[in-house]
Image (cartoon, rainbow over all chains, first blue to last red; front, side, top):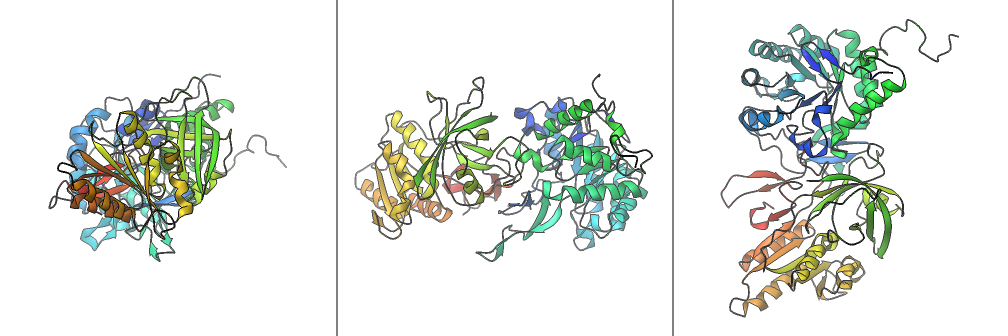
Length: 317
Length: 276
């Protein structure tokens, strides 16, 4: 058969294939260049950007866990000026969609960042990291509060015409409440999930391993939970979704597509293998080809739709 | 520029007290090993990419041998310290190893420097190749080695076998000086101070447990001798993107603190800039 079609379109964001890098796992995309052709990816999501550079947290920042890791980097980043002035001009020489992930401590900071990105050439979409403390609200994370999620999404939408992706935290009682708040405020796309909060304790020193105490759990360990949450949101909110959480292979990515995501972000896998995201894209293509799937879009939501007919190979019983 | 290569275990020599010398070679004759410098490291994992969940992350190891060896191998000298190294020690000849190398910056010492190498425990793995390279350049490196007890001298056996003279300290006095290797460093530098210009061109290079490096750096600073340290940290990626392996540094006293990545800006740092 001819090559399967891998292109997907999420609101105003067109991707060559449904694989992006996850924020904070490939820097500003440039660190992947020695390891493969980033033009084989659907997109690059840059490390979270703030108005000013940030030094991040004191070490120890990471700890390995069964099939995963916890991290508390503290959003160390070069700041929006260095991104727009140095990293972006280099990155946009490559034929790949660039998503700027931004975070602020206030709604005004989010809006100011979105306005800066809006004026830059070469950014295809903005992803909001709302898993950060809102200093206007006593440090409660934006992403656990439907009203704060709504207000920050509205403010960013007013500041930019670019597609806005709201990245959801899984550390909430009901993720669909936050998802609907983002949708109602004008979000174009939802990405989910950010890391699950976790803690590792050194039982010899009787102290948490991470200097900040707790951190975010990522990696294959969270994949079934993330697939579950994507399926829940897919049933609840009719917005394009990007699935995130432990994707390491093409098969993993296809699970997220079947749960209702139109694309995936590959994160921790890149740490263990610099070319992981490129490999995942190739594996999706090979899987589709081997099964005669002509268009990857056929897979999106397959597992959350009512079964109209028995899947191939199943008994009609 | 690092390459992510498929290698296989040629041999795994048990040198005693939990120390192993692993020899790896490319899977395919078409694969060329890149060159590397003493002090650079590799991130390795058992098996093919994307296959292993335990451990999930690769582990950083100093590259032990000199680049361009006739047999085209990469050697890793390691000690079983935890779960990952425990699994590695059970691997056998023929097993696949995925290896990202070379990573980080090696020991950038000026030609003609007089090297005093201070190793604690398995810290010898990063200083051994520097000693060998220095001797090849005509230097006569001084190698000081500290460990807890005589049986752990397995950690310096390859260095001694290569004909490098090693001065030893043990915490319990079961071999060599009783005490810390930083004491040996202090005694050595004191002796050299007795000659006018005795410390000229001298560079201390240290690798080992953090308290040992900190103490060695303090001794070097006390004598006004330059000191490089090769740092270690939990590390997820090894090529700069996770930003998990940072160390606090200051360009000079009173300057602002910056977190720098051990994998990219290190692992070798000027000890005077490290915030211990």
